[in-house]
Length: 333
Image (cartoon, rainbow, N blue to C red; front, side):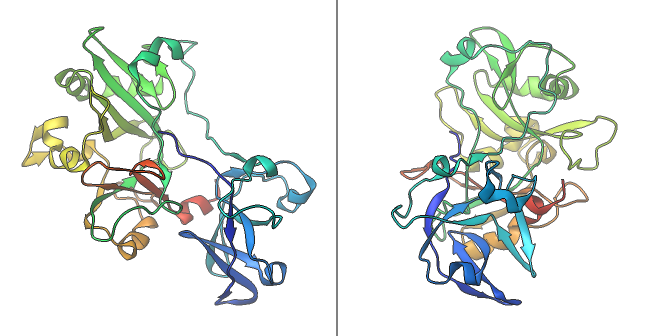
């Protein structure tokens, strides 16, 4: 369940920029890229480098200066998401040229990853089959059907965590996105576990279910009005003991069952905020991507879109997509 990072060969169709004759707009899937018109006249294909790509320290990328991480940027009032790069006509549409160009994906470091060496090895947990949580981007893979019932939730800016009670071992396990952490109260994920006793109650109530949540607050540069090292958690997904994901409608309709209180008075603050629940339409999605957070006085990182009922498709596997806000990607930090 990991999202792919590719630099794909795409068709180039120039559209006029509303505020600059020297610039043009190129639509790449659901992305918008601004280019210099003269540089792309007569060209029919290019390599699309998405935001959060790292370009190599080579002469052809020297114009970027010391900043080799590609971000969104507003050019004459229109957001440009990523970079379009000239590519030899011998490459096929859809071909991945990331390795050819030496481009990699930016991976933010996990905050507070040090637990004094107290991480379980991969071998100790390989038998559990618990996947690293990552999802594809809606900008590239819009596989939803018009009218399909979906949930759209806020994508929080923090650090992914996972929690479960093992009936075999008779104990709680706590992990970050990629690691399982041995018990240590100074560790971010164990810290939020100890500060929220209901997490253990939930895990013990549903043994061998894996609960995925976002630890947020004094974790990243968006603080969600937290101070003095305070952190919180909100859950967004559940993996059952058979390795199946719980349907979104079961997750959100039964928040009280999973996380406390009753169905008529669920603990909504224990799950990511629901922004929209209804039939899917691309025109509904677009204005929801950029906007304020539902739980703090600053912008949101973006949104996550899930169908009511779990389904898979050939292109991406599980249908569960994120759309990161261009305003978030453009922020200074």
